[in-house]
Amino acid sequence: MSEQRTLSLGFREFRSSSYERLVEVYNANYPDYRISVAERRSRDESVDRTKYLLKRFECVDLERDRIVGFGELINVPDMYHPRKFMAGILVDPEQQCRGVGRAIYTRVEEELSSRNAMLAWTMAKEDLPRRIEFFQRRGFSERTRNWESRLDLSTTDTTPFHGYIEKALKDGITFTTLAEEQSHGQDSLRKIHQLAQVIQADMPREADFTPLSYEDWETYSLKNPQLLSEGYFLAKDGSDYVGMSDVHRIDTEPGVLNQDDTGVIREYRGRGIATALIKTWNESGNNPMLAINIKIGFKRRVGWILMEKTLRPESSR
Image (tube, rainbow, N blue to C red; front, side):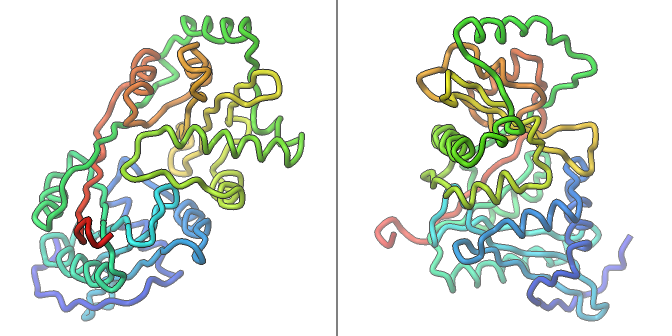
């Protein structure tokens, strides 16, 4: 147990040499959602700093010159607004309840004020009540709640769902992968990009959807080192792409695949195509997709709460 001395805290800009400490503190807070340094770096490097803000700072115990926490503000690319930000606060569990979180929040608040921010979001896991209460005391309230679902493929019988694939094939729908379609050149990739934007536009979110340019999508998706191109499934009707479901590796969990986006364009919904596309596990606050997950055998786990605070009245927006 840490000695309970009074901490003398200071702040400095995030340094590249601090990634290991950032990941160490993150994993200590969320041991069931561990990330690797490579994953954290990759996410940061994919952000186009000419378009989006990603500002992170370190909170330092000055006496020991040791990082005890981090704060950050980022623009959310698919809900982009120059005055709306996702705020993050991480505190070393051994230093919690010693004023570190309060100090970081004050620093975050100063940054929000300097940018004339009108809205701030933050994430809280529903089984961490102290974090939820921390933000509630500072004016945040729950906006949405998403539940992760997991499917244990070693114990799940997928035989009953083969019929969905057979039915789709009889209806003229074919299935392919990004790995195969990439060989067809830029035209195919740009069509897949358009499909992804159409599907994502229909997904529930906390603010208006902002389509990603092809260049941003290429950076976030195609160049993501965790992407499995052979696990990026696509449904086609003739030469048209009508559905997709993609998975990613997780460095810290080699036996697990993270399913990212799954969807079908509106004209093709209700035909079992999404069920035919799903192969691993899916995380979603989307009720129709959650129903599909449950039908297949996914088990819902602890939820994540998106909390929101209005910083400027509607009239100032």
